Image (cartoon, rainbow, N blue to C red; front, top):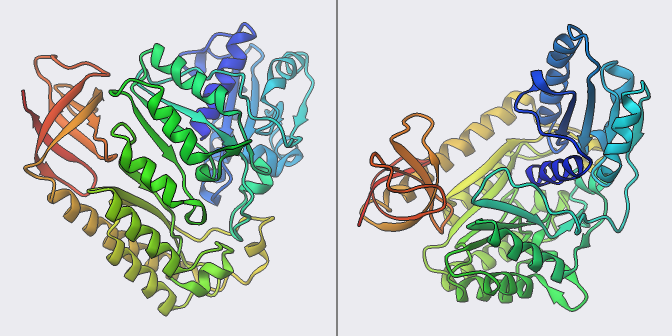
Length: 425
């Protein structure tokens, strides 16, 4: 979602007459798009600002430094007061003001623009795509769930969905530009609702609006809004990716209730069962938080049990990080940091083992792979992605395949993170 927001900002700035610099040294304007979901994300930005301070103070030319996104919304004036090189603090709903604010910043003025609205969706701004074959479309912004640990509703506001026709038009526009994979984005994407259009209908419309060799995907789902109709839609359309990210966060009903997740473990597992029955070989990934306030060893063991039962292809796994302004911030962060780390490592080790086992099962199978980029380690090898969201490395020494092509690849080897194979003519 932040990558998509960055592309929206790039479009706004280039429409205002700016050029995108190839590197920071050449830039007159530096904008840091930020995240506040976890403390380490904010810490990276503070470190980046410190690095930029030493770079910019050596310059003879004026350079505008702006902080954008959720961290800007959360910290607001604190960012200006604690960093004298920061000129702008602009929240996620105020990007249209950037050209004007930057112009004022070059005159020495500092500004904060962090008002949240119930209407801004940037539906008329076609983002500049950084990857020629993959693109994101934010179909909605904000979130209404108010999970106890999550800062997002406070930094991105309440849910509002874009008009369906603007989304489909953007889908078609991306295809005309050569994009082969389009991901529909939302903080809770399957709660999309605009007039009479629900998410499963929008997803079907997007799949039917593009050629069959263009893939449609989506991120991220909330278990409370993943309907039978959505599962059926994914199953019925060959060009909708058979990959679903469905955060569990914890395997303990007690912790799920404290998190305000609004579903039980039993409800979650029922959805998983329906998905696996309806979509053969589906890939399911998840999010897991270790060490939530008051989490016991038994709660932790229940989370491990869920991971073993569902057998996720991959997972984003984190130790609990208190976020000021959330409900859980007021709770006693009772799990010691070293115990959080121990539990997290246990989750990571289990998930890595399962990911490896699932990938080993793909050896000998042939997949249609969307060719993306040369491998960073070996330019004679290229990286692509399957319909199931898995990365594949394959030989391309003769340069037969280029970005955007499809290659049939038989898998010969696998790790917990990637598959490796040879092209089958």
